[in-house]
Length: 372
Image 1 (cartoon, rainbow, N blue to C red):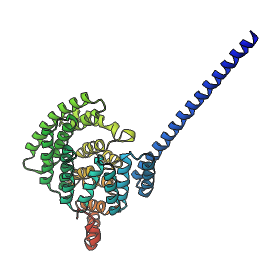
Image 2 (cartoon, one colour; image 1 turned 180 degrees about the vertical axis):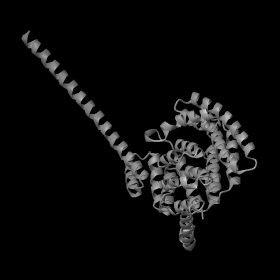
Image 3 (cartoon, helix red, strand yellow; image 1 turned 90 degrees about the horizontal axis):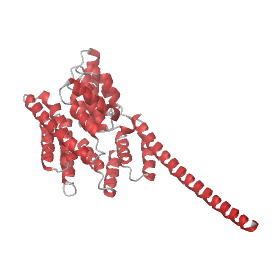
Image 4 (tube, one colour; image 1 turned 30 degrees about the horizontal axis):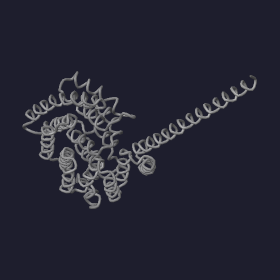
C-alpha cells in the first residue's frame, strides 16, 4: 500500500510539473507576442509623430523600420512617400510608389499618390492616364481616382470647370455601383465639392440644390452600408453629411460626430478636413489651424485652401497656412504671399510682393510649384 501511495504521489507531482511548465510556456509566449506588438505599435506611432513634427528624416527611418516587421502596413508605406515628398526627393518617391504598387497592386492609396505626384509635376494628362489604367482591375476605383485627379487639377489650376467635372464622375459612379458604401462616398464627395464651388458661380443656388439632393441619397446609402457591414465608418460619413445640411444644429451635431476621429488612433484625414472646413466657413481660424496640424493628405489640404483663399479674413487665415503641411516649402510661401497681398497692412503687402519677385526671379523655385 505504501508503495502504491508513493507511485500515486509521483504521478501527481509529474503531472503538476508538466502543467506548471506548460502554463509558463503559454504565459511566456503571450508576453512575447504582446511585447512585440507594443514595440511595433510604438515604432509606427513614433514615425507618425515625427512626421507631424516635420522631422521628416526621422519619420522616414522609423516608417522603413515598421515596414520590415509589418510589410502589410499600407499606412506606413504611405508615410514613407509623404516623407520623401516633404524632403523634395520626388524621383525617389516615384520609384518607391511604383515598386510598392507592383508588389501590392491592391493598395489603392499608393495609386492615388502616384497620380498626385504626376499632378504636382504639372502633368495632368499623365495623372488621368494612370487613373484610367485601373479600369480593368477595378472599374469603380478607377472612377474614384479619376474624380480625385480631376478635382485636384481643378484646385491647382483654380478651375471650377474641372472641379464640376469631378463631381459628374462621382455621380456617374453612384448611379452605376451596387456597393452602398462606394455609392455613399461618391455622393458625399459630389455634395462636398459642389458646395465648395457653388459660392463662386452665378448658378450657385442650383449647385447647392443638387448638393442637398446628393446628401439625401447619401443618407440612404450610408444606412444601407452600415447595416451590411458593422465596421462601416458611420460616424464619419454621417458627420460629413450633417455638416453640409445647412441647419446650424445639424451642422453642430455633425462636428461633434467627427471630433473623435480627428486625432489619436481613430484619426482619419477625411474627418480632419471636414471638421476644419466647418470651422473655416465660420471664420473660426484657431480651431481650424489646430486641426490642420494633423492633416497629411495633400489633396484634402488643397480642398481646404480653395476655401481659405476666398476668405474675407486673409490675415486671420495666415496661421492655417503657416501650420499646414506645406509650411516651409515653396508652395507654402506662395500661398502665404497670396493671403498677405490681400491684407490691409502695407508692410504685409510689401512682404508678399518681395516673395513673388524672388520666385519669379528664380525659375527653379517657380517651376517647382504648380501654383505659379
